[in-house]
Length: 341
View 1 (cartoon, rainbow, N blue to C red):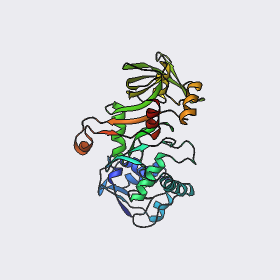
View 2 (view 1 turned 30 degrees about the vertical axis):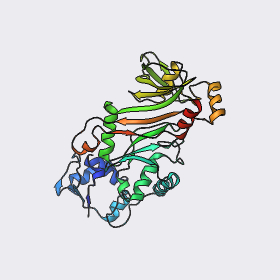
View 3 (view 1 turned 90 degrees about the horizontal axis):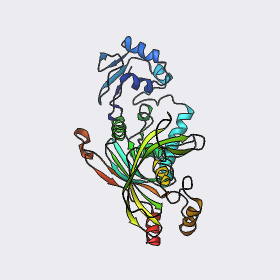
View 4 (view 1 turned 135 degrees about the horizontal axis):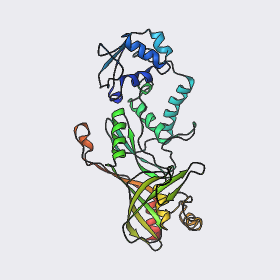
């Protein structure tokens, strides 16, 4: 028999969901049978599985250590869970990602949330098994701090809450705990968290404007097409607001507020009104981009998630209430400003 104390990072989920992660190799029927027979209890009482877990809740499993290990579980203070070779390699990837990227620019951190300034060239989430991404770096960072290990990662894996393209830099939200992930995802979903981007575009923009429409993604080409309505069932409505920050002879520094948040939305919207992002070869003009590539070595879109503005929040989230966070743009932004100014 073992007893497991629910950690803060695991609070806020149903008991049966937690158990299906803890005993990942066990059939669901086994988990519910053990609950019915009181071989698994919650706070010394019979449980059905639909209870919402709180920090410090006690789960007792009246099972042999062999059974727990067989089903991929962990013995607190004892043997490590019976992980596969693939899982061991994954833990190694977390460590390698942290060592490879080192100390990224952490803009904000509390017990539940980490917000980091992602550099250009870094994936938010890996696209292939061998990739190193911000997601792997996050777990490696928490392991290095002693806030995560093979036991804790067995029931909850910290992860990023929003995505940026590989070559878009700037602020990314990460959930260190389940509560943190749920809260940040809720703010993104209800759009109460305001997201702003800094970018250089072709042409001179003199007035603030908004672009509405619908986007449809072609999975084969990984390109997004702008539609004028959402009559196509695969299209989604989007809204982008932009204003000029500084005008140059042939380009403009813009600030964009992303009201919705869809793949390539800013890049497609601005290209549709004749102001593609400098360095964006997918949606922009090759000759124009080549001019800046030759002069400044620009090979990727100059798009940076520069600011987050949080809504008013209370309770355990009061420390983030109306918080405004900014992230320093890449050095190329300064170089272009000096070169074109």
